[in-house]
Length: 171
Image 1 (tube, rainbow, N blue to C red):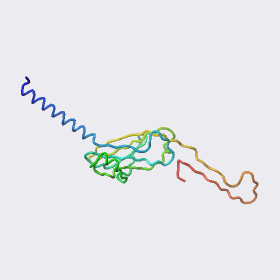
Image 2: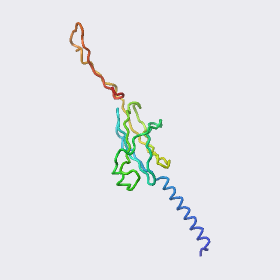
Image 3: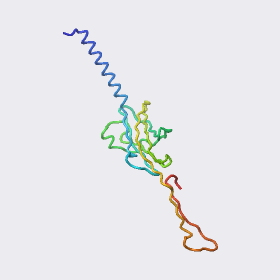
Image 4: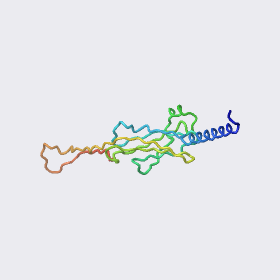
């Protein structure tokens, strides 16, 4: 038979392990996701990046995004209602306004694969990050000359007309 002192020690160790496990769970209580961009799509020009962030014990103070481990940019958080998230995780601070979004011209990143990282910071300073790989295509600018016509001869003053569009820059 086990001695009472051994049983007490085992109970103390079990309690300490339970406290450690609970502390570890609290440290991982933030949840977030990136809804857009999708990894399977190819993006050109201005893209609306969006997602959501919540925490079990604190409010989300801010969300920042970065591309390819670059400098973070603060995005609008809390202006996007996400009742779908709050239905899954009820009674969280900020619900249902736990969405974030930002528009960005991805063509400035250059063609190829890129990584978007979103980082949520809680009011007590904890951070959680998620990343998503996406692909950017950078087509050449389109332009045309409408006037003068190529098959005509002109004399005197002539109006020149045309147009140009570029996914990389707003014109």
